[in-house]
Each structure stands twice: as structure tokens, then as C-alpha cells.
Image 1 (cartoon, helix red, strand yellow):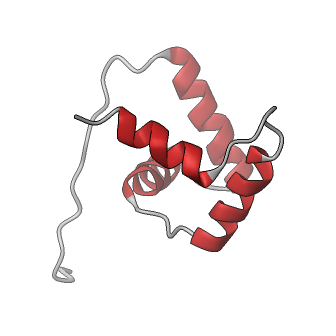
Image 2 (tube, rainbow, N blue to C red):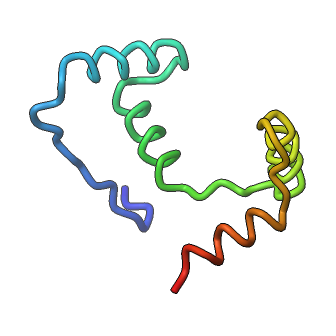
Image 3 (cartoon, one colour):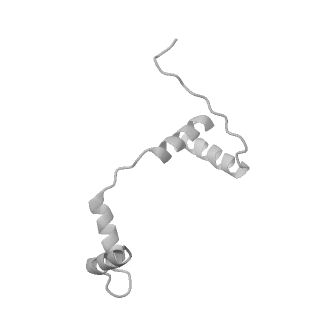
Amino acid sequence: MHYGFIMATITLKNMPEELHLILKDRAKRHGRSLNKEVIVCLEESITPRPVDINSLLADIRKNRSLIPGKLTDKLIYEAKRSGRP
């Protein structure tokens, strides 16, 4: 029966044994076949993830406060500007 889409097949050659073992372990932990685990890994690697800008900026500001001295927005702007022609 044909459902209107074609499932492609791919063969992986020369896969390092360590990578194969890691994928098998992941598949087992997630209750998936090795094939499905590889598909999920590929999908996750090419699917853009939404970014929470406010959370990202909060983390940056928090980590900036851990840097010795004062790293201000003005200093960052000036450093970026001085590196441009």
C-alpha cells in the first residue's frame, strides 16, 4: 500500500566502532531501534531550536558578572567596533 510518500534508505560505511556502540546504547536507553535512534539524532542535528532571548541574555549577564573587572555593554560595543574596518 502506498501512502503518498517514499521512505529513503541509507547505508553507513566505515562507522567507527565507538560511535556504533554509543548509538546502540542510546537506542536501548530510549527504547528505540538503532535505525530509529540514528534518524532521531539526524533530525535533532538539523532542526533549528527556538531561542529564549530573555533567558539567554539573563545567563550572559549573570556570567559577565563573574568576569574580573567591569565588562560593560559599552566596552563590548567598542571592542566589536575596533575590530571592524
